Length: 260
Image 1 (spheres, rainbow, N blue to C red):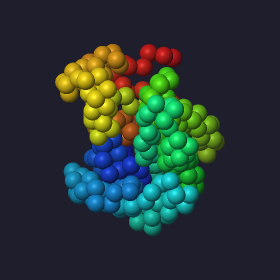
Image 2: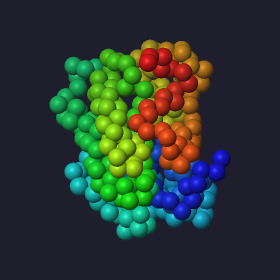
Image 3: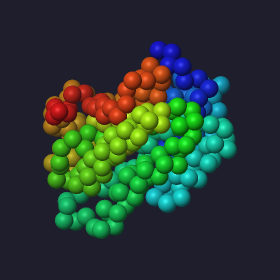
Image 4: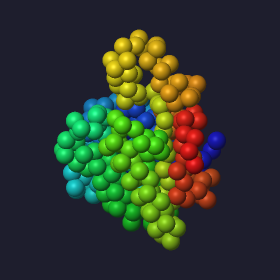
């Protein structure tokens, strides 16, 4: 599908691997220039070098988004490199899974610092440029926001906060001409999913094959999702074909989420 994104500029956080890297691939395929932001500069350069569209330009900016000024600096780097900004994809941020009573104050502070506050700061820094370009924000969140889970108290809490924040910014965006939406990925083939398998193998004394089956059964899905499927949806949401989609929270999880 021709999405009309050629020549526009995206900033993608968490761009060094997994879903973030796949989003970069899909946006580049549609012709967008991309500012990649993450902590691992070497990995980001590998992602940038592997983009299939040779006509797009990339800029790599290494940053720890826990830092209060990281959002401002990353956006400034994107503007310096490309002169405009049409899309922010907030994707960086893993939160610690563990028994609630073993989680420390630092664990909670870290979970909110990187994912929630990182999303807020990046959006705030980019907003004037997105207003100028009539651009959009896509927040990558997670279906862990949909129901409480004993081992996911930090992640679930952070994700719920981001969903509410998405709705609030979409309300502002109606007046300012900026579209804000969220994607909730389910089980996706990433390093995080691999760690989930390993944890399940350890906790339940299962083989890898049986651990995967257990996760699929527990989610009542037939397969694991691919990062490029998240990338394709992100590209669509950034395009004019999604112009009437505002404040949406879209689950892409193979049907795992059954709540309203």
